[in-house]
Amino acid sequence: MTERRKAREAALQGLYQMDLSGAGPGEAALTVLRRFSRGSAAHEYCRLLLEGVTEHMGEIDGVIEESSEHWTVERMAVVDRNILRMAVFELLYRRETPYRVVIDEAVELAKSFGADESAAFINGILDRAAQTLGLKEQ
Image 1 (tube, helix red, strand yellow):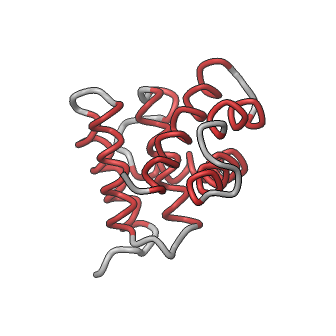
Image 2: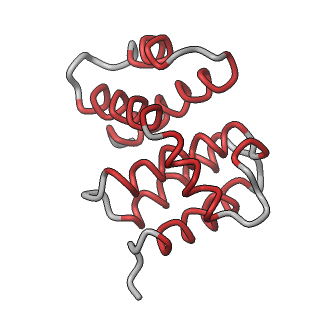
Image 3: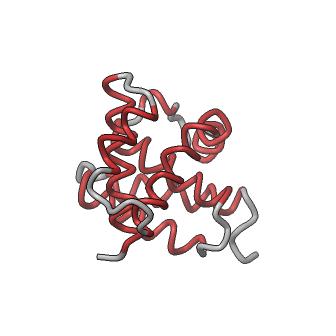
């Protein structure tokens, strides 16, 4: 498993904790960052994801809702919406990662942590988001 995959899994757990318990980003970060050596690539990327999603949540949720048909972010399963939030953050602000890699990583997280239909649901929304954001080849 790559360092970024580990970071994404940990960040998903932190975002899930924040979503369900109302924990703040600092509290969630303390909980999930403990598993990594301070300064490691996984530690830094997990921290970046947690802070980035939290800071840009309104914009991220807007992209998700614009890219999903008949769904609001609040109606989505907690795991699905937080996988989508991380992926959309990466699509918007981490352009050095190819959009296809971002989508594939999100789909893999959905297969591991989501419901049976989560992977297809997330793939469809992120595909539309990549198109809307001008990341897909025309």
